Length: 80
Image (cartoon, helix red, strand yellow):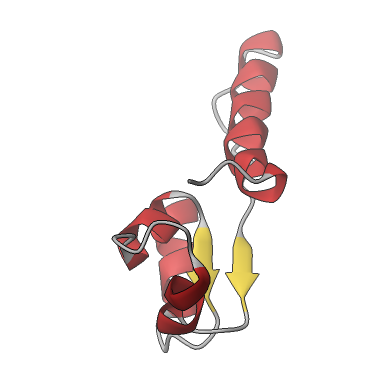
């Protein structure tokens, strides 16, 4: 469902950060990647394969919707 390369990159970049922290014996490096979609969730859901998808599923995969009034707040909450 969320197997697109751009979406998978969010997890890959986190793993790279963890590896670098171990390699350099640091704990402060945190890498994140997000997709900010210009449409709102309901527009995307119309074309999504799984019609039971929830906005939370996108959020959990670092996909946010620009049309959401709290889009930037959600982004900062995830990287905190």
